[in-house]
Amino acid sequence: MRALDLTMALVLGGLFATGVLLMLQRSLTRVLLGFILLGHGTNLLLLTTGGADPLPQAMALTAIVITFGVTTFLLALAYRSWRLSGHDEVRDDVEDRRIGTVRERADDEPALGVEEDAG
Image (tube, rainbow, N blue to C red):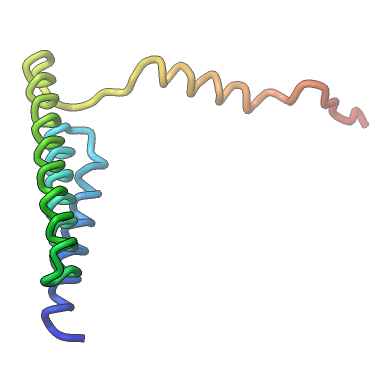
């Protein structure tokens, strides 16, 4: 393995790992940065593996356009959240919490039609 291949593999791994880590955060700004890092990592992967072949270059160009559109949308969502609530942190949905507590209570109850042995 050449030194350039190893370096590129480490850079790609770092971009993907950092992007995924940032996308798991609750702040929309961090999610946006994570998505940008994943987009850059994908483009670099396509260009690295493709070499001089025009098909991976066309796929990378398409990925750049798609990443730009989704980044613009996420930036608009983060800005709107900041303007409405003063922060960009995503809170839990009250309905999701209610459904989760109903499921926990249902798991604790015995199933219908199953009788426990009395002795």
